[in-house]
Image 1 (cartoon, rainbow, N blue to C red):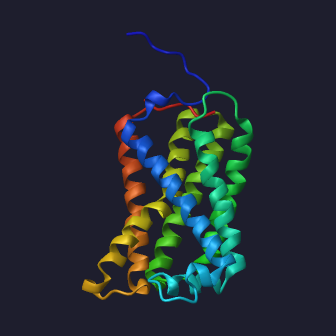
Image 2 (tube, rainbow, N blue to C red):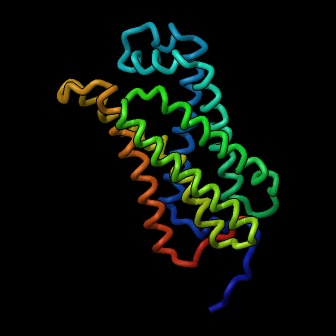
Image 3 (cartoon, rainbow, N blue to C red):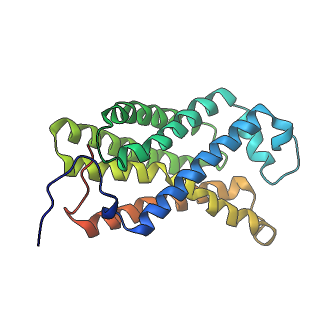
Length: 223
């Protein structure tokens, strides 16, 4: 069987279709969440902060620390929009990695700050502390692997970092289920917000880990 020489970037055929579809869905959800949050902060009466929508209480919490919220979500959106260029590029794009690491570090640091205002109390805070620490650890491992020139380790840890961060997108459908069933469960956002965090981030983290282990060393080369 013919073996292809390593290439700079990622071959689209390396990823299974389901993984690419899930990746893009997470990207779209993450960006949409940020845009909605910004819209609500800029026009609170239109977005529901002062209204009676199911998310009004959540909107009010984020509005109470607007500057910190924006300092976290805007760089996070930039990081999410950067990930396709880092992971799916075929050639070049060294500038994307120069932004990838500082943006990721900033998002991680501000996530710790955001955890001081948890909607879901200690359940949410524990999820943020655990998965955010795991994200920063993965980001650091990616950086040092890149510095050593270990492309396989770099790819593994970069995919882990991105999967963890996109876990915030996976929490949204989970929250949607809780909101939709709230009349039956009588759970308030403060009661299920943290649970949704644990479920959403766990799904992404475990799914990526299982896929990486199934691939062994047969991974794309990033950079």
